[in-house]
Amino acid sequence: MSKPIVSILMGSDSDLVVMNEAVKVLKEFQIGHEVLILSAHRVPEETANYAKSAVKKGIKIIICGAGAAAHLAGVIAALYPLPVIGVPIKSSALNGLDALFSIVQMPPGVPVATVGINNAKNAGLLAVQILATHDKKLQGKVEEYKNKLAKSVSEKNIKLQKIGINKYLEEVKK
Ligand code: RP5
Image 1 (cartoon, rainbow, N blue to C red):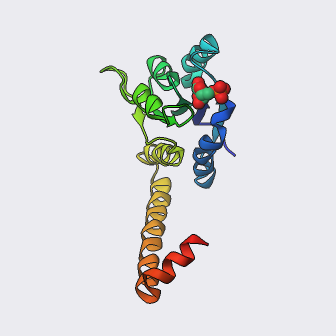
Image 2: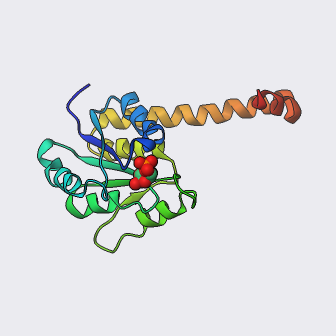
């Protein structure tokens, strides 16, 4: 894998299963990346140092996943000048709504592009799309990905019309 240009950060190793969906996307599109556990609350200085040194290391986008009082993405965005994508993680009694509000409600001037609760896959795809704005080859791969997505829906429709709702439901349940 090439030099990391996207970072995937998360507040705890308990976020890893969710955040691995972003890792999978970056692997699929062959984007160099690094994965680290950093916490705005538990290791604040290390987190700040990472944000301050990321540009020098060649990092172009940082994806941050955190649950509960999720401040990781906001703290990174306060110190890092390039795009930050936040993934709210469902890890507390409030089912991720706490993390969603903590990540999305940034003050004007410090944006965090926030995806849906636990939707690390979309965070990975958004990072790829941002990189594709200045990379024609990558843009082609994103177009190919979207065509495949559309094709899979068409195939589902063909099947649904062919076998009917009841049989389709049986197959989906399997
Ligand atoms: C957050 O608290 C983490 O991002 C994680 O989602 C949650 C729970 O962390 P652990 O207690 O499992 O380490 O900071």
